[in-house]
Length: 301
Image 1 (spheres, one colour):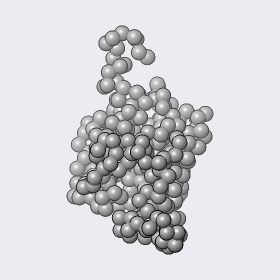
Image 2: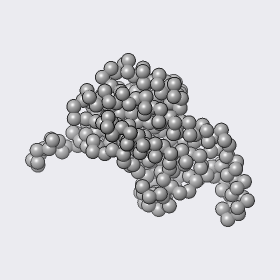
Image 3: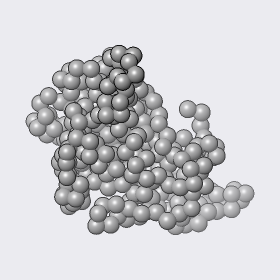
Image 4: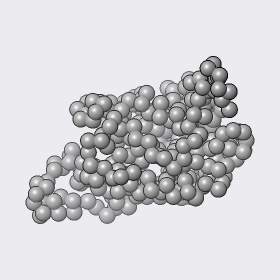
């Protein structure tokens, strides 16, 4: 507890944003936003398990970025499947009997390949037939896959890892473990996310699932917060990543910040939420979006 003195060590950044005591699991942690969070945590001393379906991509991230003082450990798995969520939790339990402190549900997909404007153009929005035909191009399978990963995956991973999060809390006096779900501003915007209604709907659902989880977990002392980013470079937004598992964007941004997100923007966000300075945050939505929600119609959050 702070002493009130001007030089109180509790008020220093090194104390407020210290994550060196944390053991974390980051899904989709080998590329994009997940990698940004993983780097930030390990660069500040945390042990980070990263999951994903592509073992070679996970191994490349470990090779390139597990340089200390923390550690990155690859753990292949498909978080869209309930059985895999349970398996991953059991494997982590075997490795970390004292539990974990942070679960970041970052893995996500976008399957609106037949309606997104960037590849299919935008219909005449004043022509009802054109609008109908364009968006009926969306396939049922695309909706199922998107909801399975972006919504059900968040739910089952959070439930499977809850006992481990509670154990990590009990093993670390003064700290409360946390789930951070990476949603999107697409889940808050009233538009179709540039022609991606299934993706936008899944992110709105993921945000509300997070609200429910925060309420469900209140009596077991595990927190749940949401990071809802704007446009950051990732395989989803850029289409691919390089040999360094990083992506690059060359687009004009119209938000007040005048740019897309960067590694440091996401690093600061996760260090704030995961560090001791963020312990009073629960059931909250953080929007690292450069102010996009201020200039585009968005829901009231």
